[in-house]
Length: 150
Image (cartoon, rainbow, N blue to C red; front, side, top):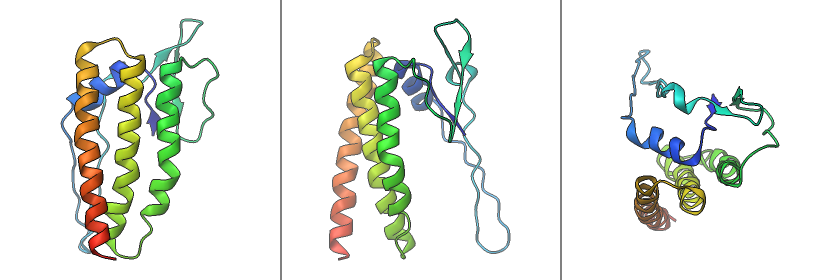
């Protein structure tokens, strides 16, 4: 999976403007698979200092020439990933889903804060404000749901 590294503004614009395109396959045992959302080419690469496009795939080291905004985006995802993966191992599938979604949403909030701090586009900053408001409310709802099951 390619880690999106264009700019904070372009990343949020690309992700937020695309509809979810999930395709489910049934293997006779109730299993479903999803295909990844196909992002437009502008989301796949960024230009490095030498003027060429660079991409980072999962598991690769981060480049050292990241802008402060890109660094904040990478940090928000790095902070969230391990916690999310661990939280999804709860025994009950419904609980695992909600436990995994909380750090996922926290990552979205951190990304939104990064674009508010480092971005330039007013539309993207407004989108980021909306992301923060909705994701924080959903986090509160999920925590309440989990507390009711303890």
